[in-house]
Length: 287
Image (cartoon, rainbow, N blue to C red; front, side, top):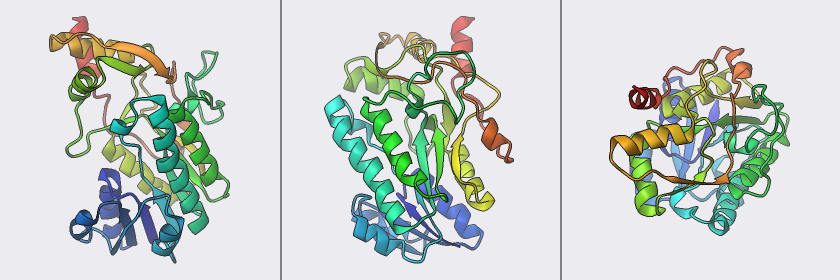
């Protein structure tokens, strides 16, 4: 197959390596010209473009069997709702629209944020649970991006929790310290939501699985057997262990308030390999 990865970040680069090892032809994109020489060692061709540049995306993806959209918003551009309105729409919706116009087979890396808090009820949240939180940009624009992809019967949406473990990525203590230093000790998400997290290698493996299994539709991707501790439990424990002031949770970005079911993708043979990265932190705090 010939595949186009829109966004050669950590996930895109690792995915390209796996696909090239299988003998696939891989084209990728970056927004940074200076990264081209490094990326040319990983893929067959590199295009310098933004996802919103529809004509450039179409040219780069010419002849491709699928486009994998791995772009994600930059957290430093999302401090306020106004910033999120502009940045999420530009990065997510426009990229998926460009990809859809270039190829009917698009795989999009989406977010659990589309569920909002999951609504009322106690049953596990699955792919049939209605999306919500339609006013918050970080949820609304993921939903609109998904709609672009799913307008084709060949489109596939993978919904993920927070990703960790990529080379050079912030650890969870580093993320808390950034919230203290950069955001004034305030966290824009909900205190009582389980802190689902997924290792970037599991993200890569899930996309690879979807490509080779020819899956379409919507899939939640997380550890299907465990429900993690809440945001407040994890971040309070991190703060206490480092003698930092605890964060203030603003609840502006709602997150699912109960178990997320990944039974649908597990039924296809995929499994998350990495355990909850914060389980030991909370366990230590409770001793």
